[in-house]
Image 1 (cartoon, rainbow, N blue to C red):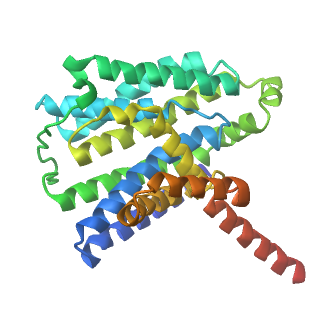
Image 2: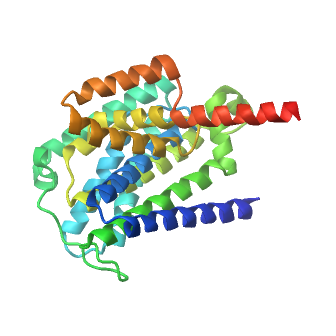
Amino acid sequence: MTSRLAASTWVWMIAAIAVLAIVPALTDSPLVRDLIIHSAILGLFATSANLLIGYTGLVSFGQAMFYASGAYGFALLMRSGTVPVPAALALAVLGSALLALVVGVVCTKTREIYFALLTLAIQMMFYNTILSWQELTGGDQGLTGGFAKPPFLGVDLARPGHVYSFITVVVVLSLGLLWHVTKSPFGYALRMVRDNAARVEFLGLDVPGYRLVAFVISSAVASVAGALMALYVSAAYPNFGYWTMSGEAIFVIMLGGLNTFLGPVLGAVILSLLNHFVTAHTKYYGLVLGLIILFYAMVLRKGLLDIVLERLRGVRRGAAERA
C-alpha cells in the first residue's frame, strides 16, 4: 500500500512538472510566469496551513512567522555570499523547523481556541523582533538590495526561465511530500484527532504529540514557501511575518476548499488573478475582496473545489442508483 502510494505520488508530481514546463514554450509573457510563480508559492503556503486547519483541526494565526523565518533565513545566508542556493534553502527550512518545535511544544498543549490566540501572540512577538533587530533584519525596510545567486548543477538563477523552473519544481516536490503525509497512517491519525481528540486520547494515542509533529511539518513547508519568495524577489520584508499573511492563507483556503488537498492551490490561483485584474480596473480592491468573503461565508459556505467535488460525487451516486 505504501509503495503504491509513493509511486502514484511520483507520477502526479512528474505530470505536474511536465505541464508547468510546457508553459514557457507556449508563451514568453513575463506576466504569465509571474502569476504562476506567485500562485505556486502562495498555494504551497496555504496548503501548509491547511495541514493544521483542514486535517488536524487547529487554526494557526502564526503561520506567517515561519513564512518569514524561511525568507529571512534564506536571504541572510545568501547575502553572506558563501552558501550555495540548495544549502541555504535547506538550512533556512531546518532553522524554521527547530523554531516550530520550540513554539509547538508550548502551543499544542492548549485547546483549539487558545492555540489560535497563542500562535497569534507569538507571531506578533516575532514580527516585532524583525522590526527592532535592525542590524540583522534591516528593520522596517527589510533585507533589500538583492543578493548573488551563484549557479549550481547547471541552474543559473540569474535567468528568469531557470528561476521559474526551480521554484515550480520545488513547489511540486513540497506539495507531493504533503500529499504523501496526508495519505499516510499519520495523516489518517490527524483526521481522527480533528474529529474527536478525546476519543483518540482514550484509545491511548498521544494527541499533543501528533499535533506537534503536524505543526512542525506545516511550519517547515511554510518556510519553504517563504524562502522561495525571498529567492524570487531577492529580498525579505517585515510584512512576510505580519498577521495578515496568515489571514491571507486562511482566505485562500476558504476560496479553494478546506476539505480537498488541492483546494488551497486553486484558491491561490483565484486570489492571484483577483490581485491582478481587480487592481487593474478599480482602486477599491479591499471592497471587492470583502464582498467575495461575504459571498463565500453566507452563500456558498464551502470552497470552490469542495463544491465541485461534492457535485461530482452526487452525480456518480445518482448514476449508481439508477443503474
